[in-house]
Image (cartoon, rainbow, N blue to C red; front, top):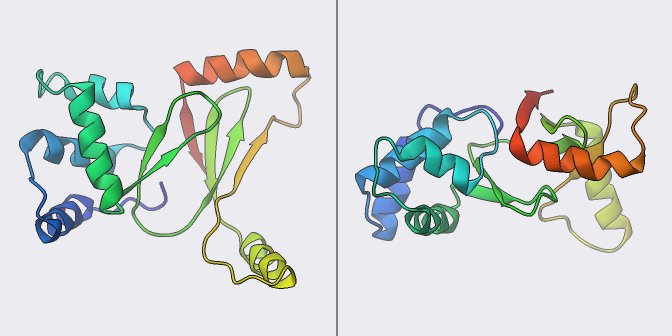
Length: 166
């Protein structure tokens, strides 16, 4: 997530009220957790983090809450080829992701050249760019790992994701 917004919980309440959605204590806790997190958690990771405070909060409850947050345009679900969705709070600025297939690091970055190239390509092909999503899968230049190890690295990443800001 780019720049964390301290008013993310307030924005949630404003949009939820406008849409007529209930603001329950577990939902408020989920939003606060998303505002605090510096990574892209899975539903299971969110449930683990919230279960102490809300023991009856189930994965079904979290999925319902996440669906609501997605309808309110407050989260984005990412699939970084892991077989599970990762959740990111929408707090402003567009950014792209570089995923290190060996370490699991997720590097968020922006670049004027990339932005310009996306617009240029759309125009060249006769389109107007509305939005784009860029995910780059890479390994460190110093890596000597072969392609057979990439699958093992992805499995390792599923267990311990990291986020690095560029």
